[in-house]
Length: 499
Image (tube, rainbow, N blue to C red):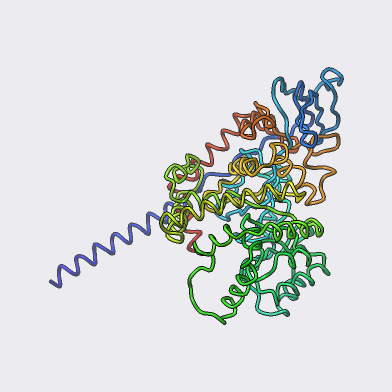
């Protein structure tokens, strides 16, 4: 018996040794490099394009001259002389829109230059706002610098969550966080669900005094109206109006406060099936319109990320869960997404639970449409890298959700072009097609004003003077797919997770 045990131990030791050697050898093999960056083209001439006017909801045939990454002239076809050294793009029968913005993303630190950033570019997303939570602020700043210097493929990172606040313990801590804020002017503090009102409002006040932006989730125990008045710059996620606009809203906020401060016990969800059902069935339009008006008066933006609630509603749908675009998501991340979807089914069980989350998702769409018609500016954002939120690719899904909510295709596109530029006060140079604008352009096969799905028909992307042909965009997708399913990359991914 003793001999058998010794042999087993020797065999196990040998297997472990071989595994260690195998892992060491695999880690010595470099992962695929990030994709090559196209050279910047000094002069580009686009002829016979149908330029989409997103403010006028119309198209106009134009020739465009781009010099050093900037639109220098536009005119009716034939009116402009073509510079001798220009790269000529014939856009006859095609449509041009500004490059797209995703205003709610999360850059995963795991091989973002090979996985996440190229997906944004392949989908025509040229600018993003990163809400933090993953990876270091310094790393994202370095990536942004490399992208702007044309050393890396990806969108500009126009604003970064330099501080991610899951909770606060005191007013002193709130003020210290503001005083030590590491970000630059476009960057911000993102607040999350459990920040208590007694610390949230001193945080916002201190931030306002220092000209630091606070945005993110509406903390669950905080009134959205009071947060908007205090200076919360943008509310994220479509559940905002459901949580805040029904007779039980104040009681729910108090219940969250008691839960977070330990005054009440229990680990059950306050937004369970019964809770969501109450929000849907007793929704109060007067409360809703009051909140919308307060947000408008105080310049508070709304970024609904409807595809996150769509995931909740379709978590049990096999077709949804087998989205063919999963091949672009790392295999280990896919496992996490599957677990999240399973968790949603468990959280809202049975036919009643599933119907409730579906109704909640649909009600969110309805309220976004009503808010937009009431004059509230909506931002297109996806929560990229959250479950079934595909970086870049899902921005087109979100545009379709906004149209489903009742926005016209032009209004939905404004939420992903003109309004984000206004949000960052960059409208003089970004978000439109006009003389003096940075040349971030998508040349589409079909007219997006006729069908929002046509934003997917990208033939060419121009990013600050870099030209990405359809072939080049497909190469980016192929590279991401290879990296997402690469065995060597998986070992490196795991090793980074363990460090």
